Image 1 (tube, helix red, strand yellow):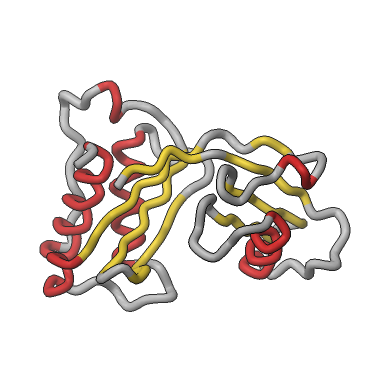
Image 2 (tube, helix red, strand yellow):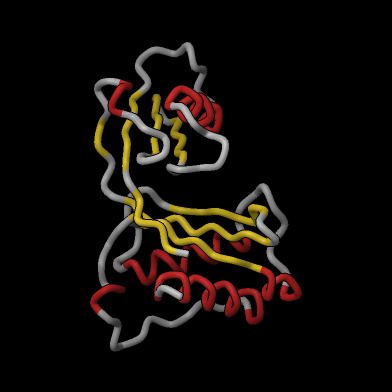
Length: 169
């Protein structure tokens, strides 16, 4: 299991069992000192159970970013009830480390299998990770991201950015 995934698992288990967060080790390895946006997704029996993330880093280290977002996926994703201790053995984890977003000038630059998208208009913002099951076209990817953001697809002036992810299971 990749260290990022192991950290997400430990963070969720610590939070669900004790309500606490993992401390930052004094000997944090270099791979955990990086800064990046991170999404942590939890699945139970193959079904999404929670997913929370940041497209830009909000914490000082990727260690802190993973811990924060893993706890968020377990307890703060409003689509689901908080994870219960009895569910812990059946959870699987995915950690996506995001590249910096790049503005898209032409929709032909998009590929839903390769790139995630961020759509923004005024204060509304929506994000969709790449390579999601059932999303095969850039148009479909944008439609869903806009729906998540509450942006009308006919609105003009929508800013679109793309990003890549390194996905760890």
